[in-house]
Image (cartoon, rainbow, N blue to C red; front, side):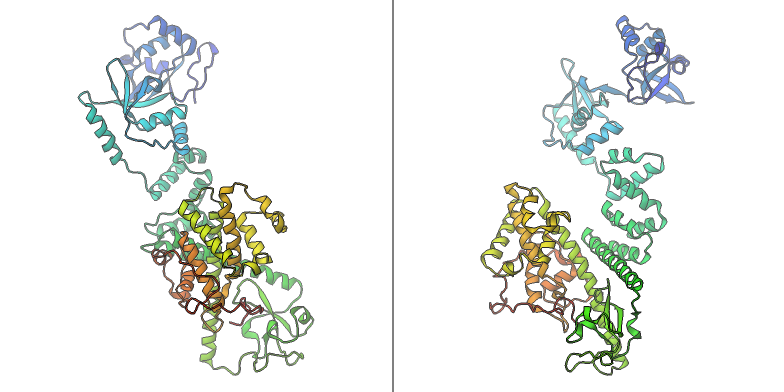
Amino acid sequence: MTNIKTQAGVQAAPAPWPTLTVAELAAHSGNVRDIEAPADLLADVKDNGVVEPLYVVRTHGDVPQVIDGFQRLAAAVAAGLETVPVTPRPVIRIDALTPHPKNAREDLDLNAPFVDSLRTEGCRIPVKIQRLDGGVLQVNDGNRRYHAATDAGLTHLPYEWEDDDRDAAGQFLDMITTAQHRKSLSPSEMNQAMFSAAEAGAQVGRIAKAAGVRQNDVKTLVKVRSDEKLSAAVSGAGSYEWTFEHLAALSEFANDAEALAAITEAAAEGDADEGDVDWAIAIERTKRDKRNKAEAHRAELETAGQKIRDAEELSERAMPVWRLRGITTEEHAECKGLVWVFDERRGDRYEPYCSAPGLYGHAVPEGASASGGTMTTADKEAERAARAAVKKGNIDWDAAEALRRKWITDLIKRRNLPKNTTNTLIGHVNNALLNGSWGISDDLNKEGTTEILAGFLGLNAEQAKDRSSFAGHVAKDPRRAPQLQFAAIAAVREKCANRSAWRTDSQHAPWTRKPTGRWFQVLASLGYPLTPIEQSVVDEEPYDPSKKKPRAAITSGSEPETEQEPGTDEETGEPEAEEADDPASDDEAAA
């Protein structure tokens, strides 16, 4: 900003106006009128400089022409000022205006982003004013801008005069028509405008304030649009309106063409919404995280000098150690037949095998061999396809779990919940406690439950060590009691909702699948959009990872659950069998 007074080396406070030199304005004969500045104006200009900007436009030949402010220019010449503030459009002091006493907007919504944008960029749209009897200048259109500009500390607003023949009825009709004629930029249009502003040299902070977004959001946008591959991915999704969160997720996969293609494909679906893209992103993150963990585990094994083999390299006699009888993984560590094979079902680690159990004196399960007997080529292909489907299904399950638990965590953190949501939470907690089942008494204090609950409550690693201190780390506001109680119940139900719930093959576990399906219905009644694999559990249908529906298409008809007593069979009403406490029951069974 340029100082508006430089006479005799005195500097006034900076003003939010551009300036022109007095010499440049005086050089144009049309700006110098045969007038003398009033004495009081001249004295004020000598003391304070020119405070009110001159309204100046550029004529043909780029000549500055004063439209309003001839006396101020004359005073500036007489006072010996070097520069004066100017404005390319007419402005008026805010303190000279009066808001309309019957403004149609009941809620002005003077939110912080709007006020900040005015503070940063000024008001760009003129208010419409009218001179009433007694000299009152009333704002007929632009009352929201008037109040927000006041909050932003502006001193002037651009203005235009109301038509002289506009009656009171016409003023209200103007409020209607101007509101109807305004259309906000779409998210993609806003993003394009912000990126263009950045290309034109605007700083991140300035863009963020003008748009009412976070600086990190602007940085994300610029990063994505500046990267050829990421920008192509955004464009490839057609009309999908990318959120900043999704743009940030895209940038995570800048060097992963396969992941970018998968996310773009999900966004490009005709009826895709944010839930579908969330699902695609969660799957790609899960795959990436598993890949990274597997690479780290392999490096650890190689450092320790362990033997690593591909499954195809093993003989038909080879068998995972967990299937051997009478020996633990720790005990088998000294076996000469120990090799490590990538665990396709989990995808994030290698598991120990014995290359020849019989040769090294290990007992195998009765009636079982490592490969189940001689297999034909077709059998092997079928087995390979089945393993691949389980692997993909496990990835989808883990991705859904990440989305679901984040949603639950956000629900628990919310300070204010709608009354019907609170009532649903309370009803579910009452059912879980009063019915005395669902494993609440057995599982509430187990290690797995404690770990999940700590995550729901947002506790750090140190706080999560002592379960007895959890209550002391959470908010004491009694209004949040339903959410905190629900968090404890949710942790139990999440702990029990393991991977076996989605399986419908030989490893199906109805004692897990049925209560998990009811749990998902509870979440759906609270507004959680079920993913395709979760919906398959609710619907008691097999899940085919290669034929899943879009997330949005299957959640629109979700209905709140009418919850029966947990732990009973839906058809017979009899108690369900307890899940076996077997190492193979929680995804350790063979694919």
